[in-house]
Length: 278
Ligand SMILES: C[S@@+](CC[C@H](N)C(=O)[O-])C[C@H]1O[C@@H](n2cnc3c(N)ncnc32)[C@H](O)[C@@H]1O
Image (cartoon, rainbow, N blue to C red; front, side, top):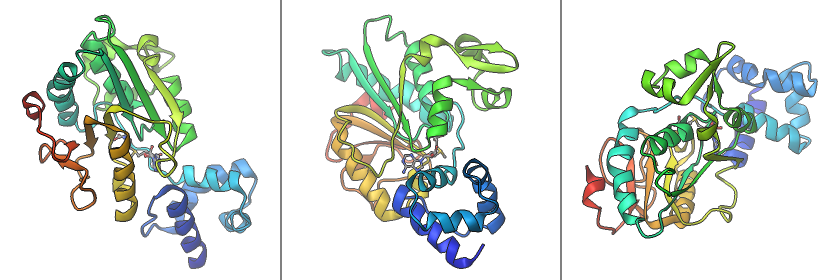
């Protein structure tokens, strides 16, 4: 690949998704783009980039999706999910006792491990049985990830990463060497393809936003922009959960971290509910 093509690709990727390409090796880019080359019938990556420069939107979209990193696992960074289960959720249940309605958004859900981890916690807490209405929305830029997440089928390797044996037995069925999430949990989650750079107009009044391990791929300006928009759709007494290496500090005045390690943020200037402080 020519240096000029790498620069073109990096600029396109940043414009369309906020993702920074960094300094990847040519073969790393080529292996990410190999499925797109096959799908669109290009003999090599140079031909693909040539066509990309002609502005074919479907191709640009496929290339952008192929360049995303979709690494995830159930209950990733376990302490953060424990904090959600043991501190954020109990506080929220008190805050929403009058409406008995929760709106939770997993904003970069990859193949669904994050929203299904949330669904398992809500299910184990018996909230639906107790008459709560749960809106659990899960979105990702990558349409293949959304399709996978909607299927709710995982390999043995995927369920072995982070999922306690008890949760596996309680919430999955094994068939033909793969594990399928129980239908009741699958139906708890509404999946939708969504780019965090697009308008948040369809989202409102969210109680908890999980935006984990995605801002870290963006430049500071894009991080600040996305945090601003999350601030607009998060309820005034809502919670934002970032990944362990992500922070709102220096990027947004809208949020204040509640702890140093678990990524739980509240709106700035708000008194922290005691129970949510753990
Ligand atoms: C590393 S995964 C993190 C998944 C999950 N949140 C976790 O913590 O395990 C990052 C996800 O962000 C998605 N992503 C990247 N850029 C995005 C954007 N602009 N809008 C929405 N999702 C994006 C990728 O497709 C990928 O699935």
